Length: 416
Ligand SMILES: NC(=[NH2+])NCCC[C@H](N)C(=O)O
Image (cartoon, rainbow, N blue to C red; front, side):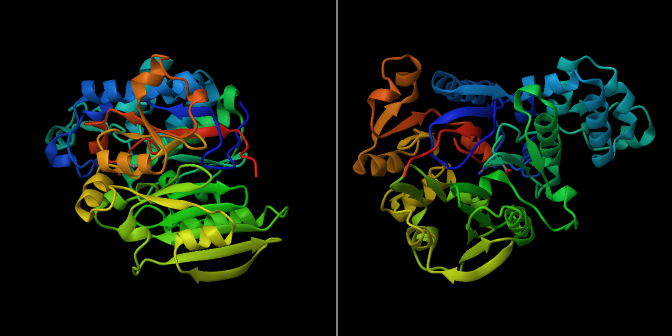
């Protein structure tokens, strides 16, 4: 499949998913925070919920599973050795190299995702409070974050939290070696001038239009990470490009990424967390213009919506949680603003956020349960505008919603 993402909303043609496995359950309340969760999860419920998302996506597009893609990389001897060695080096566990290298593809992929238990075979390990020699990747089902498709390239994330860095190492190996997906990858780690403070995660990066990227600058994506994107875009000399940066508060943790407070729904609507996106605040919106290999303008804008409108993206905001500030806060916390578009005006979000769904309904979006589409009782082609409601009681406790759990790699062009 050829990678191509020119918008957040074009009809989806390919998406990468990861059905959560044992890695989401392998933690205790004591280390949930380190795992970046706001609670511990129940795997069987989380899997059931995720499965609904997978079935829905299988119905409308081509889906890929990280585990299968990873297995196909591990079947290539050179790529396999390089990947294991990189992981053992970054995670300071050189002892595991031989053991991992000897495993067949499937158990090896499982260990790289679910972790490797610590063998208590010396005093230090016996006394260690850790359970794992290679910790589980608790957040891998948020496939959005470790890699992002921007036009026909893949930007490999540089994760702000070390517990997630193996995700980006695995995604880089997948995009560099999977025969199904060959594409050029770029990463701040291999920049000409490496900047240690540069971090960037997919939840913060929205490809609004061919020439507009909207990027969150907060706890996960640093200004230096965005500077890396500026350098990337300076190399493209075909047209003027814009980066709209939205500063984000670092607290509460539900504001970790821009897509938790702002997502595109279609050509004429976006979803917003009103207190941050529409009310005056100290969090700036900055507009950067790049043309012919240099930054030609960098200015502060009144708000993201204003900046988008000035660039002829006439989006009407729909408020996450509706009008009441308590409902807004409650629903934003459970990823109420985090929508994923299957096509223009056909979006997916959690059913639990009832006030958000109601606000969408007021804007003409029909609310449809995911099962209606999965069973074939309803066909997306017959619907103009809809919000598909997903079950989600466990998944949101991991800290994300439909957009976080999907990595689109190909969308149709949106006309106009
Ligand atoms: N695109 C997103 N908003 N992803 C949410 C990721 C949540 C995850 N627990 C983390 O803290 O990293």
